[in-house]
Length: 95
Image 1 (tube, rainbow, N blue to C red):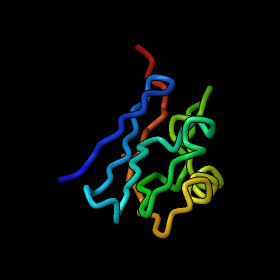
Image 2: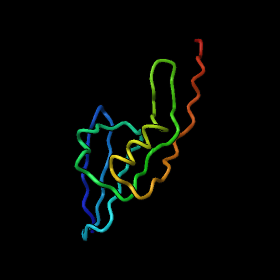
Image 3: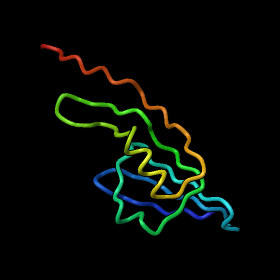
């Protein structure tokens, strides 16, 4: 059995899953976009998050790199597992 906390922030979902014994906690963040204030009291043994940024012409679609390091430090993670995102083709189509 495990316990699930669901965070909803800026139209993005993330989850903290803990074992019933409290021995292992996993944090899943698919976009590496998070609110430090919401997570300041949380801890995670394992963080699953992207480590490569995906940029579109006008905004960051997926954060990563420095943000992933900050997230791991904030949650005092022992392990970081890479979340692989699809490659986005940002070519413009005329039509």
